[in-house]
Image 1: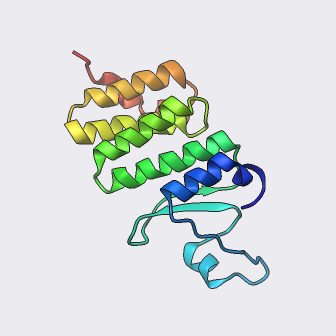
Image 2: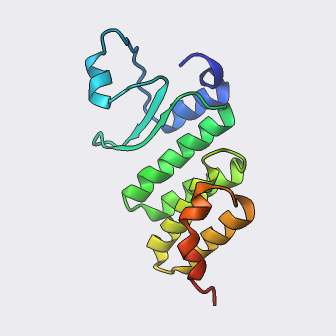
Length: 156
């Protein structure tokens, strides 16, 4: 984790401030117990776990620094969403969308932003707004196709 985007100061600062990092060497000829336990099959692998050790997000392989930061923020959003901490999830997903509009994970963040807002408010218009954003900004994304059913939700 000392090459490419992993050597970037912004990345390292964000990791130190927002996570409890664990770094381990991987040996492919003789997999370590940690590699087996965490099902590490390729490096780098970044995992976001909660305090009980439950995995909420996994990123495998190198991505550019901006995308990497977006993935980490998205992963925190997924953790908060899974833990029913909707306000915090919304804040994380909004951060991804606003600070990393061109990152590969951003369309997924838009989708999950709508989901988190729906769970928080029980208003299905949040899902429709997510669909509208996806269609206007990320029309070719998988997440636009996944949100297609939300196009039927009326906004008035």
